[in-house]
Image (cartoon, one colour):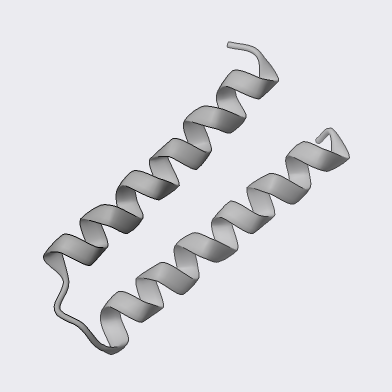
Length: 53
């Protein structure tokens, strides 16, 4: 699997997890914490992809 394909797969996985969190978790602190965690991981993945790591 090439680097762009892995990046796309990772971002798709983060998006799916965010949607699942929105559908399954009640509103409030836990859902927001999961979204913040996923956003941080997505940002870290994007930075690593841009840096060529």
